[in-house]
Length: 175
Image (cartoon, rainbow, N blue to C red):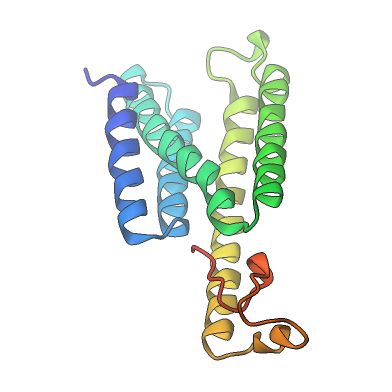
């Protein structure tokens, strides 16, 4: 048997390296979240232990790299130390609420299949795919607008050597 965390560790390292080399995040988040969603679909639909174990492998292999990349994305897309620190703190604080919610969703009375918990996790993963896909589209459009000079008006009444943070027309969002 293949331990789920071994597969998740290898995939997390591969995805992190590829994401950093290519300087893109969204496609990796979307694809690994979709992989995890497939794992949860298998959890929900199968009663056979071997099949459910395979679903566990897919879920872990998708969730762990997705979380790692999601945690790095705000740090890459927010300029200025205070703004970046605030964005990261907010993201982690909101993310930690998932543990509180998880206690309520994975009740012992729902075992061994945990339809409620697995269904909510599946819903979250599908929402993640949609939100990240939408943000990817928006950020690519904003980068293209800046490439065309569509934000150069922000230099009005500002010295060109002055840095305006992520409002600066020279700033490019990592997609």
